[in-house]
Figure (cartoon, rainbow, N blue to C red):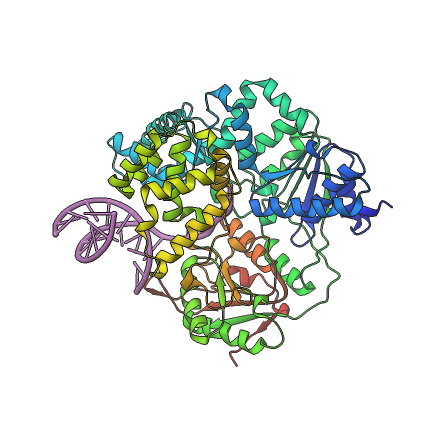
Length: 605
DNA sequence: GAGGGGGCGGTTTTT
DNA sequence: CCGCCCCCTC
């Protein structure tokens, strides 16, 4: 047997060594999907002698892309007699598309130094456009308008086509905003996140020779988390793969939890229609959880009827029953969890525990109790690095150097201060050709000329954190001498989101993890608590009336349960204070689905 | 451009 | 109940 395949199970081997042609890997939770995908990439290079630059790996997060790249690199270095210099391109849909637009976007009138607007920039832009159209931002909340426009772009409906789909006065006006918004983006030489994909598809449609160029380059396409693709991403992969048909996708419909932002798990199911000679391989052996946990997970997810459900099995031990705790209140719920963690001390580490909740608002009570008891915890989520005010400010200066038409950045700088704006503009005027300066020089000069750092007092704790963030940004700047490379990197590559000072209690490494169920996807922990198992909270009240949303809640529950390796605790409260309102919720329907003999009722003592 | 009062909304969130 | 955002004032 070929060495590289020997540490895979038979199904994984089949997936990794699949000769070519369209392949769908239905990979359950904890079944080694990343393993299958990375081994497949390594197999293609080592055994099929496919040049690594002909392989393209697309993912949803930079973290996933980075991990895959690293794992492939290790596999190659272990298994090759000849030196392989590079790994295949592994990146997000967005970074891949940005790359293409930098090179070929000019065919669509997009200059290579286009700015990329993130969500905050989009909201600013939409706000401006809405006001210009004399519409009230009370009735046309920028975020809602943006969601609508984003939804349209994900469905590949352009601003010119959208009016024919618009129903009712609200949508008709949004159609106007959409039209003006796109005009605004063009004038600013900017694209938003959705445009990155939309425009590349447009490019491929209008210029078949460009599509051909990329089809020649990327002969093997591997896509991770395919259940999370929206229509635009689906069409993009189809474009790239349709000529040679060497498409491998991995996914699990039961783990589709981003339907609300356009993800469509049917892309997984419908693949057969586009590629009739599709090979389907199921990865159903689970390496993560106990038999009991898998059975509990299945007893819940099997109620979903609109998508296929895998039946996972494992050679792992039966394990303990899962624990169910009825708390008298949200406070008692938090007490119970802290008690349990204290009781486990000595047997396991704090980093073995994760507490998962449906809504961010639920974290507060938990945090209070962890602080009180002195147990260190890490809150995952919170303000992201690139969303921070000081980061956006500094980037606005740099963005304006790169693209002088970027009025969103201009407005931002204006807001920082008229004085600083003037100094900045004077400095910029004397700048001959920005391209001959490297990013770091520009970075330092701007801070010097504008005196931006003087806004913050290093003796103040909060200010100091901001200064540190700017320094962090500076170190990123040192890695990208070309300004446009740098700006693209900071727009599309999520920085490690630094936990807020008050949100972390003690040493980061040895701490309990608190996060939403959504944030837990892809992770695993020996001991998992899922809290707030109540009707109206989980499943969330907004999903109760809608069958498909209810199924998504169920999938979310499935994702949460399958994070657990050894022990699972489910808790609910008879009474709960939520948004200052007392309520008494019924026990979640998901709990009713679990066979009683798999449950042990937990008592507080 | 910061600081205070008032009003409102509050599911999940990568790029 | 809390935090965010808008808008007004200094």
